[in-house]
Image (tube, rainbow, N blue to C red; front, side, top):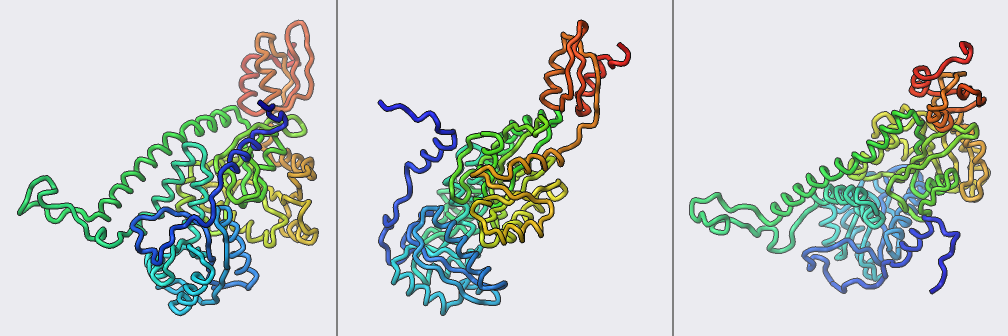
Amino acid sequence: MHDEPEDLAVGDYELEERQALRRVAGLSTELEDITEVEYRQLRLERVVLVGVWTSGSVFDAENSLQELRLLAETAGSDVLEGLIQRRDKPDPATYIGSGKAIELRDIVAASGADTVICDGELTPGQLRQLEEIVKVKVIDRTALILDIFAQHAKSREGKAQVELAQLQYLLPRLRGWGGNLSRQVGGRAAGGVGIGGRGPGETKIELDRRRIRERMAKLRRQIKNMSTARETMRHHRQAREVPAVAIAGYTNAGKSSLLNRLTGAGVLVEDALFATLDPTVRRARTPEGRLFTLADTVGFVRHLPHQLVEAFRSTLEEVGDADLILHVVDGSHPDPESQLAAVREVFAEIEGASEIPEIVVINKADAADPVTLARLTMKERHSVVVSARTGSGMGELMAMIETELPRLDHEVRMLVPYDRTDLVARAHKEGEVLSLQHTGDGTILHARVLGALFAELDRVAKPVETV
């Protein structure tokens, strides 16, 4: 028996557990034609990336494909090639055009790839026709992101949300192979009715669609029930008037690291996209001693699938119900401005989020280019440069949070009876205590407090001037 190291945080244990088993490349089934497989699970191994460059500069196109590479590697893939095609718009039949699809087939055969990943959301027709030409599995960016979420979901609610998003994506793309497309149940098999019965009955694919819809309805009910506990805790915090701060931002921008630095939460930290999905709420205090809550939310990405936004709506409410948003951006990224724009697009879909005060937290200052940092601070006036890894800039960030939190409206100087010391404790937790003086009749409390505590003090305590 060997002793466990005592200095490991909770996140370290989670990271060690996640790194224990990984997908192994090169275990693919050797098939000449992918259509030989009737039902396939998404298993990514040796992949070729394909993107269509429709607008912007070549830098933007290459940056988008680099992000697709990070997504593919996060899902456990070995990326072999990356290809970009310049077009006015994606080809409606094969995404890249029939001629380029044949070229892609030759590249796939030469590289030994078993999967093609397209940098966009493909229609069911585009997926089918491209697969028929390249003869290997073809998936799009949306399916890739859904697969990563499925790997990283840990809580019951997270797993249910991801499964719901996957089924929403799968439903219009469901298709049969060979005889399954027309296999029907009817006639005698439909209850022994025979001639003059209810007709041919359901095809196999219609039966699958119905089962998927029933499963989606069940998942929605489960998610609604599971979100009740978080709503109850949120309402409790609102009743106590504890201000809420939400940490939001692009995936891998350092949100969990920032939460750990500010609160010592011990949340999993990993240099990977979508490493943490389940929201974590922790308590923190401003330099003046004011209590507030910090919520770490799911990371965003360019073209985040709308199925995920819908499925994670209950989780994203942590952002919509916050008093302040810490919008974290990776200062060392080649194009941080696009990250900011992508996150704000998702904010627009969350009710009330666009009206909440926002502090842009430019993270990873220790690895960023000073020119990039200067450019960002010029564009984002309400911003602060920090490094969650080294701790630099944290004092300035906490001072900005103190300034932006809802104000403590009431300054009180009251004599609180000794049998109500719970009110003094609440003043320490929820407000800002300026001074305490213990007398024979009780405690003279001088503090700034919010409305709910002021009303309670006004009911049981006496103003000092009347004593």
